[in-house]
Image 1 (cartoon, rainbow, N blue to C red):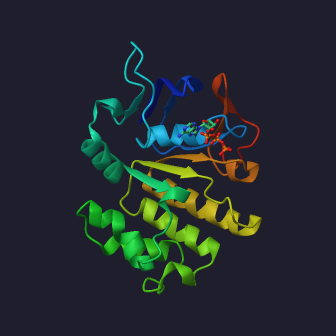
Image 2 (cartoon, rainbow, N blue to C red):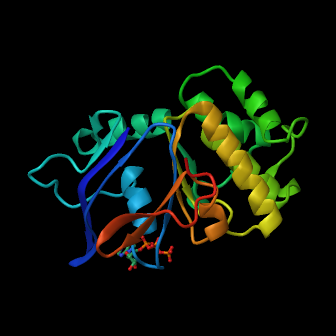
Length: 227
Ligand SMILES: Nc1ncnc2c1ncn2[C@@H]1O[C@H](COP(=O)(O)OP(=O)(O)OP(=O)(O)O)[C@@H](O)[C@H]1O
């Protein structure tokens, strides 16, 4: 579904990611952990096409999503792919304050020319039925994350990217949000990559990878849902 093939990223001559390779399968919920500064957010940004990897190795394109080499796309094509195939639960893509909750959740449908009905269904799925006309400032942090998850999944993307989706929440609220995220991605069949520092969050994933300077490695110690 998503293949990384010797993916590397260097900032100002300093290597951050070196020849990362991994295959993420459809429907899989994967947590990525690792020390601060090791390059987890960089990895998500590269997969999202928001940043460019180092020149492709001779062995082939470094990021391939559903058979499409990201490096072969121009800006417009990359934007279209991102819009159609990806959903984000990133701080940088936070809920827009001047739009109602329904408008926020409907945005990916609007951008993809899809019918708007699913926005109402998604608001209901995340427990915010009847709140579609409210604005983000009327919500708690946990409710806002529910809106972010509804918006990330409403257009049924093949790939969901989440960066610390429960970073600012208390443990109980965080647990509820992660259960919701897990249920929604399992029913939609999306592949989900979640970067987190939280072992409790990682335990909700099917598997956990640890990113170090030597690359990605699977660890089995934290996954309650591991199959
Ligand atoms: N745009 C950029 N320009 C230069 N250096 C950058 C840029 N983005 C990230 N870096 C550097 O790359 C390294 C990895 O950063 P990144 O944010 O990916 O780490 P991280 O593992 O997500 O850290 P954390 O867990 O603290 O969020 C850091 O040393 C950071 O300073």
